[in-house]
Length: 166
Ligand code: PNS
Image: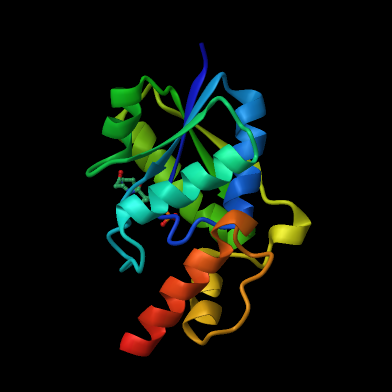
């Protein structure tokens, strides 16, 4: 059975992330979407909120072979704990790829058996990132079409609140 893991910050989970999840679910028997900490970023949403956003979107799309989890620590350890042999990443640009290349090599150094599969983002999602969603939402701009519709109002409210408190 082919088990893949799509790890990320997902702060928040975007339609670009959802597209990668859908495509990965067609390649792997089981896909774990894992909320991990990126030590270079501070997050707006709690891990539980991000897991909930992923669960909502996956259920809404009726994708049956995908589960959302969260993990503290290294991606290679998370992959081992769920039996994943392959990590999945989405790439939007050559700049993204440079970053992914270093991460993939680091993960390979840490765990020789773990492979990395890179899926190229669809052209219509190239401009979408969690950072852009946060930037717009914090300033109360519309985030319609940037996050899965099922999460739109809750994400917009939280970002507005975060923007007010800053
Ligand atoms: O969505 P992001 O922020 O690009 O995801 C990056 C993430 C969380 C996948 C990456 O930072 C990560 O794997 N963090 C866990 C710590 C780890 O395993 N580091 C070694 C690989 S560079």
